[in-house]
Length: 139
Image (cartoon, rainbow, N blue to C red; front, side, top):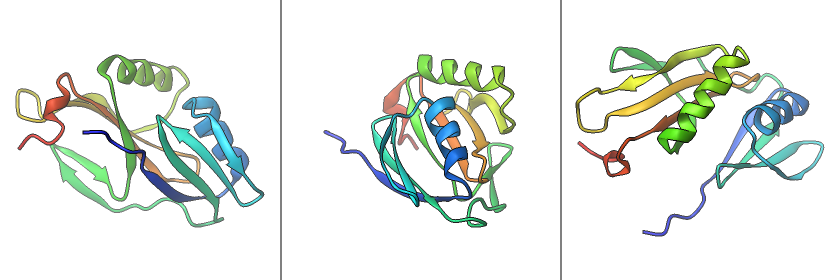
């Protein structure tokens, strides 16, 4: 299967904060931009931070494997090595995790490394990885 990049537009309260968080901290190269929005290359996918003061974040959650997972959220599936590098980097700079980096569904189909955190506007992100990518849709 040849996957195509997805596109996601989301609200942010401040474009300078978005540049610092997505561009500098997460290492996502910047694409086109205006005074109202910024395109980022989010691990090969196109995300667009749209200026919407007061419009980011949500406090809804659902229980998953003993944690309250924020809804809505978005993220990326990394390699296990890249996930560990990102977890170490985010921990080192003091990112406040909503759900600390850990292994979810240990010993079960779909076992995965996961972590949740929020951008400065309150948007929830999840980064995950599988030891075996074939487990991505395992039931």
